[in-house]
Structures are given as structure tokens and as C-alpha cells.
Amino acid sequence: MNRSVLVVIALAVFLLSSCKKDASHPASTPDPTVPDPHIGADNSVVFVASENGKLYALDANSGAEKWTFILSDTGIRTGQFSSPAYADGMLYVGSSDRNIYAVNAATGKEVWHYPTNSYPGYFFSSPVVVNGVVYLPGYESKFYALNAKTGGLKWAKDFPREFESSPAYSNGKIFITSNDGVLYALDTATGNTIWYAGGAGADWGWDYAYSSPCLKNGVVYALTDNEANSTAQLNELSGEDGSGYHGVYASYYIPSRFTFFSSPVMDDSVVYFGGLDSNLYAAKIGDLLFYNKKWSFKAGAPIYSSPAFDDSTVYVGANDGYLYAIRKDSGTLKWKYNAESIQVVSSPVVSNGVVFCGGYSYFFALYARDGSVKWKTPANIIPVSSSPVLITKQGKAIHGGISGMTN
Image 1 (spheres, rainbow, N blue to C red):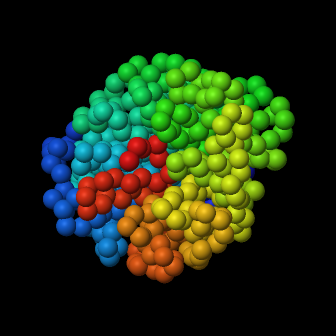
Image 2 (image 1 turned 30 degrees about the vertical axis):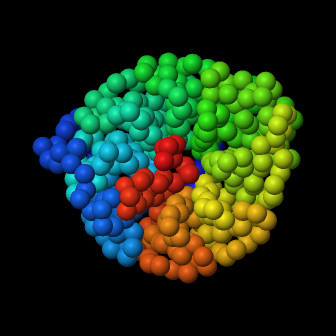
């Protein structure tokens, strides 16, 4: 399989045979039901994983390190692209050492881990946690559902190809695209396929399915490469059966074919997503057959990052090393921040006037009003390609756009 695109993202990530932990086990401490007395009380906390093999908890106000957890102890840069998900005082993340971890958000101590057969040195997909269950595939052709408290296996299902996108949840179903070019809707209780879309002529992953679907009000928004008419397109499907939401396939067409890395995010009636043609797109949902282009913004390089937004602005990273802030009403540049990076693939998170994101050698927080730096925390000269999750003072979890978590 041609991995040229992967090399661009990974920036010469080493293929490693990492030290695999013993079989899945619960730790004697801490009690996963005990919340962090600081989370949701006095201050906000941001969690992020780095390609240096560490999971960080940082004070959202100062960037000061609260704790670190070792995901991979090889000491060499790995393909740590999985982003942490937060639920009920716990963090869940896939590690480049092949394990799925549950970590106490208060102390940074392991609660359990589950071993997968993920390809050594890589973990692309980010978890979604719903009703006490962690849903996550490794970089392999198997999808796992685990008990969130114990790490016990609820079910595992085999698929024709490996996964590089992240799952999303809606109404008893998990949605995910696979590298076989198919978008799947799975029963959360059994893992059985309820419906699927894709295959010949409409490839939901092309050769690589990095882009993840997003859900709103039971409607699936997903990006695909269409061989039939040599276009890329954004589709709107019914979450119930995969049919066109309006009785036909409502699609927004892009007049070029390329694989998507950026995942779509939904804001009221507008969908934002980035492309390898360097454009950030804003597409307004049409009434019947099509989307209406609201605007597109040309960044300085292809966009792998998934966008985030607040009331007035859309934020997204690009492969020119900049984080861009784009006005939602006009699609014009508000500001851009030089992250001193070859590329910014981390998907930003924005809350209370602050934007959090990962760069090449540090994690940073910017003031949303003008892009000025609030703080920067070093990551040992190793890229932060994972996306953050922020726990606000009110205890709300805000995840990056690459994650399927419902916030």
C-alpha cells in the first residue's frame, strides 16, 4: 500500500515494535469514580497527547503541567495521533504502543489498559464514550467496544480494512469510515452493521480514511471521493438507514479529487471542513439536492486539521505551520499565528475566548480576539499531532473536531 500521504503527515515517523504491556488489568488505584476536585471547580484543565509518547494534563490558564502519563516508553517519536476523550472523571486514548488506556483525570494514574493488534508505532483513531462504553478501533481491521470502568471487552468486530478515522455516535449507532472506502453504521450493543454506504463509484475513504463523519440531529455529514464524476463531495445522509436525508443524496461538490484528512464540523446550518487543495470550506445546507457554498478560504498549504468555531470565527491549522482564524460571516482572514511548525495537524479547541492547539514542539493557547499568545508549553521538540480536550470550570468537556464525542 502506498504510504506517501502518511509520510507527509507523520513526518518520518519511525515504525517501532514497542514494549507491549501485560494483559488488560485494572489498577489498584485510583478509584475511577472519584472526580478531580479541581476539574469543574476552581480552574480549567486541558489534556493532550504528544508524539513523544506522553499524555499531558495542563492548567488551562497558565499552561503549567499538572501531571504526565507515559503512553509509550520507547523514547523515540511515534505516530501518536489518537486524541483523548473525557467522560466521568476519566480520560480514554489509544496509544502507539497498541494499547487503549483509561487514565484518572485527577491523578494521571492508569485505571486499566486493553491490548489491541494495532500496527506498531501508530494509533490514528480517537475514542467516543457513550453510556459507559468506549468505542475505538486501532490501526487495524478490528473495532472494539470496552466497558469504560473496567476495560472489559463488550464486543469486537472484524472489517475488511484498517481504520484511520474516528467514530461518531447518534441514537444507538456508531458511525465510522474504513480504509475499504465504506461508511458504516454499527449497532452499539452488538457491533453489527446496520447499514453501509460506499464501495464502487463512491469511495468514502479512497485509499485512506482519515476524515471522520459528524452527526447532528440524527443526520450524518461525511466526505467522500467520487470516482464516477471525478469530484470530491460532502454528503448528508439519514442516520437511520443511510439514504439521502431529503430522499436523494444532498451533496456539495468540489471540482477535484483528493483524500480528506480534515473532518467536517456542523454549526447550525453550516458545515466547515478543510481540504488538500488548501481551502477551508463553509457550505450551507440546501433544501433538496445540494449544498450552497457560503465561502471558501485559501490557506497557505493543505489542511489536515479539523476546524473549531465560536460565535464569530472558525479556527483551523494548515500544513504551512499556521493556525488560521477566519471570520464566519465573510470567510476573510481575522488573524493567523505562526506555530513555528512544518505543519499544524492538531485540531484546535476554543472556549471562553481562548484557542488551544498543538504545534511542532509545543502546545499553545492563544487569545481568540487577536491570536496573541496566552501561554506555550514545550513538548520536548516533538510534534503534537493529537487534538486536545478541555474541561471547563463548569465541568463541560470540549473535544477537538476529529473526535466523535458529543459535547
